[in-house]
Length: 163
Image (cartoon, rainbow, N blue to C red; front, side, top):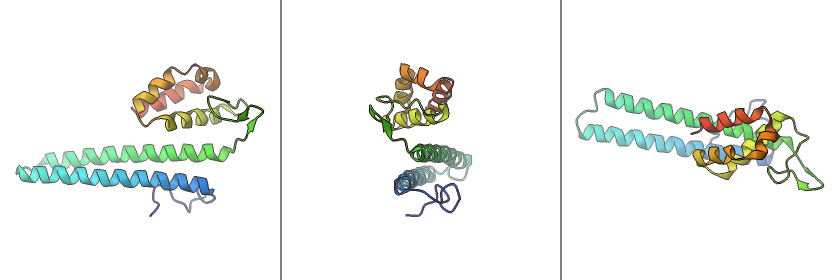
């Protein structure tokens, strides 16, 4: 597998743990699948337009540009998600007398608000792949409002951007 979702020689990604490397590989697999599906869509549209004798016009260019734009947006979302996962994994939170820190069962109040943001974001990203269900669940989470403070709206806006 060729890793091109991130530059592993960059100082930001040079000293990844085995768990973090598996996260990179999973993100790369998502990206590769997305690229393959995008290429299949482009070919299907091209063959359809050729069959209808309109492949030399702007419909083909417009369709390919739209598919490429959507692909780039989704790749950026995958990379952003990977960066958040790597940052959260590097926090190395262990736990307290109530067990390991896990949101929402045992939230870690010793974290900074930006670290809490990553914890809650990671929790919701793992719950479901449906962005609308994720946003709805987050909107009903009363613990998140007090746990995140001023970052609650920021995470809401981020989850909304995935819809």
